[in-house]
Image 1 (tube, helix red, strand yellow):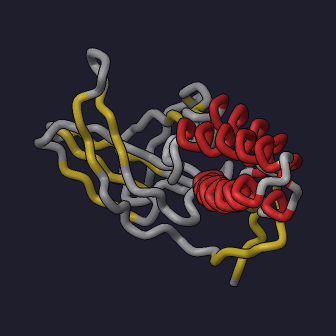
Image 2 (cartoon, rainbow, N blue to C red):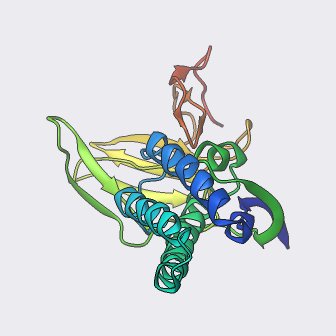
Length: 223
């Protein structure tokens, strides 16, 4: 089973020096504008800028016809290719098929590759630390292959959490909260206590962020 996914096109690597220089600036500007959405680049943007500047310099020098300058240009182009390709792969992984995000970074897009369509496994390298601003916690995990969004929860240490399918059953001080994640606009929460009235809240989210958290019109009492 596989699902068609949009990926970053690597065709720009086959272009001329001039086209690479032009595309490089577009990519640098795009990545800079989208840095909050693609923070985990394999090659930092400052390093890309250095590669870009060096390619411009060596290509200008190579116009003299000097064998040394031409050799320097070839070496510079090879390094430019490697770094921009690395970040192309980073963007493909982070975007996970989001064509709009890929294009916003300045890269071009292709949908000719497929990736396995599987349920995500447990988060790897998951950490929580004091945030840079008062009243915040910084949460970080390894990129989860195939994930479109992530759900994080902060609970008191005495809380107990069980998972029933896509539902998290969170109990604190004798009261239970149920959180259900789903990729569709309809869902069934599991593991609820019978004959207990609950209020239902919900929101929608995508790679840009979360929508407003709203309450359903009526409370419900599961059988």
